Length: 229
Image (cartoon, rainbow, N blue to C red; front, side, top):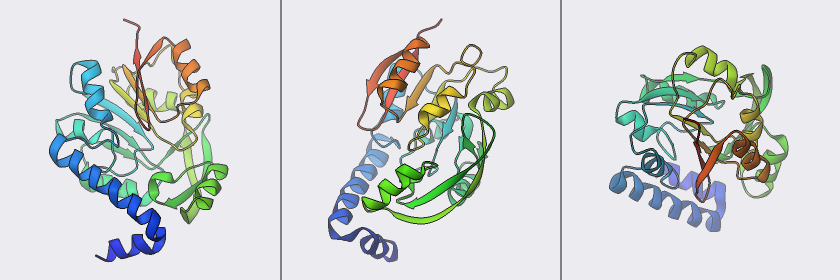
């Protein structure tokens, strides 16, 4: 009850009603369909591939269960890498998903650090100052901002999937998806399927040029399949 009151105070009556409908839909998907993604992306991924995911890298993984593109696969025995710059959220992974490798980290075009803008709702948190301020103007609350170490997608592959095939790459970073895609060595490391929140034309062209085909667009994400044998 305290959480509900807090959400009502933060969002106001109108946004609280929207939040409530979203939560009801999430619970229906979770307990009826066993889907934990925001728009059934986990079920769609299984349908596209024809098999259950065995490995994944989830960048901007946010909550270990809620609106999560990889938790369904974890429940069925898959393991992977979860990367999340929100320190409080990544700590929860250690308890809920201890068989995964859980990294408090950001992914960028180069190693270094970036300022992370922690917002409420936490799904809107971002490394983009511009996007953070836009979210605040639209009703989000800026809770904190702090530096987070960054690495590249190429280095994540080198460290954890150097000699392994990756089934799923999921990217949801509120404004940094394209930069993350640019940070990989695509000649060497090619996940079978990519779920990316960024639906912009430049991201689409980037992946099509890499011989990925656009299979599905949901409300929030685009799913690309590697067409290379």
